[in-house]
Structure formats: C-alpha cells, structure tokens
Length: 157
View 1: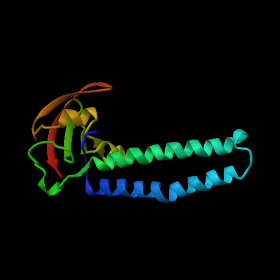
View 2: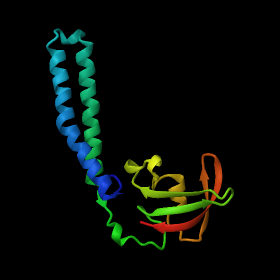
View 3: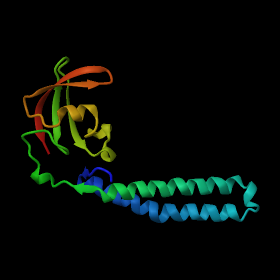
View 4: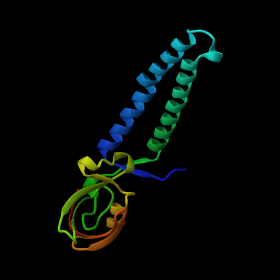
C-alpha cells in the first residue's frame, strides 16, 4: 500500500475535481473517439482505432493512480500546526547564508507543488533539509548545484 499523503483543503478539492472530470467528460470523449474509429471499417488496419484504444488505456491508468492517491490522502488541519518547527504545510521564510537572498516556501504534497506560487514538495531536497528545524536554525542542504546553507527566519501557516 502507498504512503499517506497530506493535503491542504485546496489540494484535496483539486484532486477530487480532476478525478471526477477524468471519470465523466474525459472518459465519455474517449469512448466517442473509439466509436467513431470503429465506424471507419476494418479494425485490423485501423490506426485511429488503435490510437484511441491506447489513449483509453492510459486514461484508465491515470484514473487508477489518482483513485489510489485519493484513498491515501489525508487532510491536514492547518489551525493545529505546530509553528515552533517546520512541518508539512508550513510556510517557511529562509535566507541563503552565502548571498543573503531570502525566499518563502510552503511545503506541500508532491501533487500540489508549484514553484511559481512558492509551493515546494515535502519530498524535495530543500524541504527535506528544513523539516523539523526551528526559527534561528541553520541547515546545510545538498541541492543539484551543490551544498547551500540556509537560515530559518520565520515559520507560519
């Protein structure tokens, strides 16, 4: 069985909405494409039919994967987060010790990660290096570009 994944309410709602869309309108569109390809004649030489069936298989695999993710999803009550240390869903303001640059990230589930909005996966190297740390702590994190040292300035939710 898969590991439990923690979500914000927003992330859980997005997951449910996408799964619903995949099971309803997207599934119907694929069925229609298969029917149209089937109507074009001999199935043994019908590349359009083969492509539609392959798309259906990939689509069903995606539904199965998302259903499994939803079955292990847990909602985190953000009002009960411990702000004394970095946890999943914490919003963390950090400073690069070497160049003084500050960044703010929220640690979220992998499926919710979006660097443009400041949301990084709890499984990312930076998040892994920050988890469990407190304000004032410094931590050295191995990233693809080498080792970086960060100081934790602030933790919020």
